[in-house]
Each structure stands twice: as structure tokens, then as C-alpha cells.
Amino acid sequence: MAKTIFVRSMSSNEIETDSAKIRSEKILEVIMSYARLDFSEKTIISDKADVYDAIGAGVNMLGEELKSSVVSLREKEQLLREIHHRVKNNMQIISSLLNLQTHNVKDRDFLSLITESRNRINSMALVHEMLYATTDFSKINFKDYTTTLCKSIYQSYKKPDMKINFFIHIPVNISLEIDTMIHLGMILNEIISNSLKYAFDTNEGTISVLLNQMNSKYFLSVEDDGKGLPLGFNQEKDGNLGMQLIHMLTEQLNGSMKMESSSGVIYKIEF
Amino acid sequence: MQVPDNCQIYDLTCYWTWMGSDGIGRTKVKPRAEVTITESMENSAAVNRLYTTKKFPLLIDARNIKSISKEARDFFSIQNRSTNINSFAVIIDSPLSRIIGNFFMGLNKPSVPAKLFNNEQDAIMWLKQYL
Image 1 (tube, rainbow over the protein chains, first blue to last red):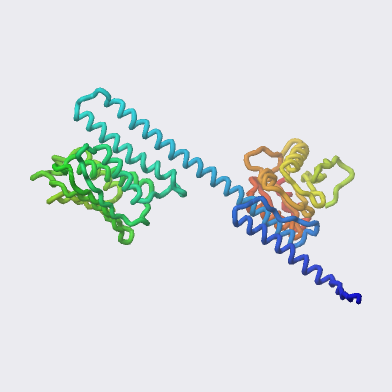
Image 2: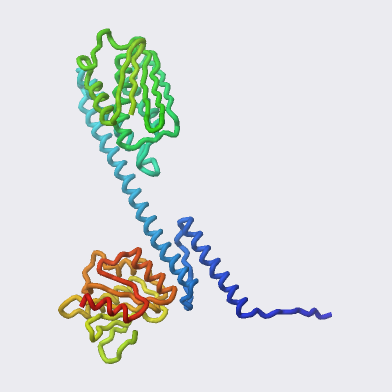
């Protein structure tokens, strides 16, 4: 038996509604691809020059502007990454040149001076090295930086029988600006270097680095459990260049520094 | 805006361009024109040929435009390039031309005085101050 199929023809209103729905969906698809930063799609502009075409043209133009901004931002990021990379490389070249100066030199004071200078340069180079690995190029995770810096300083002063443990207690979420990091890196370098050079008679001990944050203030303490400062030690009279640097850099951070000594030495820096 | 038949007209890919008897340059977008950097440069060259001794205002009828690429919009904003026009007015009316005109003014920031108009008379009135 033959089947009867009823076909209802669409009214012009229904056709218009259907067409509007299809056009809206096409525009939405393009907006969604722009949201994914995929700019390969564009809305198709009909010859009607109606509201849908206007919306479509607007979406297309916004997409073009967004694409241009994204490309420009990526280029700037690439440039910034390249700059930090080059600064780090140049600093490493300076450090290597200093190292070359030590060949065939036996003067222990001179060698120590070179090591101190190299470590200061390395503490700054590390900031730039870590910056070009970040995504925003402005902040560095303080815990990661401190951990890497401590290892690096330890390697430069390590003697065969030396066994120093580092206890680093810094919240993982603390990231600081490049200028602050350069200052803190130099400060940490001086304090840790002093501890490794002078604190431990037995070549064994612990150096602790702690950082706490309270509101907008940071409290950094660096402590060793070594023999402490010599009796009658006067910071101003007996302090070396490293000590002067710690004071100067703390001031530049608008911070304050206290040093205490009993069974070891503890530096408390507030900034 | 009527394309005259009694003066020299540059009949371009997307535009008709000519100098009005009132000293205001004119350029009319052809129906459903899709303007890219090529067509915008072609029109700019024609507009510059209208120059005689002093810079002049330009009236653009964009009511028939279908699309304009970013490169063309950037080019028309006259940033960092020499031009013989001292101002321009753009006539828009349809939703499409209004969107394109407003995007152009908002995002591309022309370096000479520029304004959108709904009709030719108001646009000419405004441009006359730059004659």
C-alpha cells in the first residue's frame, strides 16, 4: 500500500527565523574559535547588509584586532625572553672571564675575592635565568630561587669533607618582582657565603632560610648553627664588603636588618 | 552621492573617486565592495592625484561597503604616511556600514580630523571648515 507523506511548506516567517538561527550559530562558532585564539575562521557577510552582517563584520574586525594584539604580545614576550637570556649569558661570560684570571694564581686572598665576585654575579644571573623560564617575565618564585642559589653557593665553597645541610622553609606561593629578587639574591649570597666561609669549624652544620609574610611585609631570617661571631665583633669596624652590601641592599629594599649571635649567627631582615 | 559624468573620475576596483567642484574630494565605495590593502592603496593613489596646490578635505560614501580588512583600516588611518587630505568625513547608514565606520574611528584613530555622518549634507557642511 502506498504511503501518504504530508509535507507542510514553510511560511516566509519560518524561513526567515530558520535562516537567522543558522546565521547566529555561525557567528557564535566564530566567536568561540576566537576565544580559543584560533583566528582561521571568519563570519561570512551576505549581500543583505542587515543586522546579522553588521554583527558578523564586527566580530570579524574584533578578531583581526585580537589576532594582531596576540601576535604583538607574543613577539614582545619572545623579545623579553631573548633579553633575559642574553643578560644571563653575558653575566656568565663575565663570571668565566673572572675565573680565567685565577689560572696559575696561588694567592688565596685573590682567589677568594674572585670567588666572592663570581658568586655575586651568579646570584644576579640566576634571576635572569629563572625569569626567561617564566610566563610573565616579571616575578620569580622565591623558594625555587633560594633553593637553586643555596646549591650554587655551596658548590663554590664546598670542600671534600664538608657536609652542610640547608633547611629552606619558604611558602611555595611567594613570588617577587625582579628588582626585589636581585637585591634579596645578593643579600642571601653574602650571608650564606659568610656562613660557609667562617661559621663551621667542624665542616658540619645547618643553614636555615625562612620567609614569612604578614600583610604586605616579609620577614626573612637566615641562620647558621656554627660557632657564632667572635667576641667583641663590631659590624661597622670588623664587617667586610659583604656586610656593607647586606646593609646597603636592605636599605634599598626599604627594609631593616638585625643580626644576632650566640651559638650561631642569625640575620633577621624585614622588608 | 551621485557619481558625476562631467569631470574626471577614477574608476577603481572598489571606488569611484573624483574632485568636486566645491574643492572637496569625493570617493564612493562600489556596491558590495570588499576592501583590502590593495584597493585602499589604489584609492589613496587616486586621491593624491586630485591634489593641485593645497591639501583638501575628502568625503567618503561608505554606505555600500561589504568589508574592509585590518591592513586597509590601518592604511586609511593615515598614521606614519604622507597624504594630501587634511580631513575626511564618512557617510554611513546601514547597520553594516555603521559598524565598519565606528570600528574604523574607534580602533584605528585617524591622524587627521575625521567624523561619521548619516547624510551627505551634514558631512559637506562639516568638511567646508577645512577648505
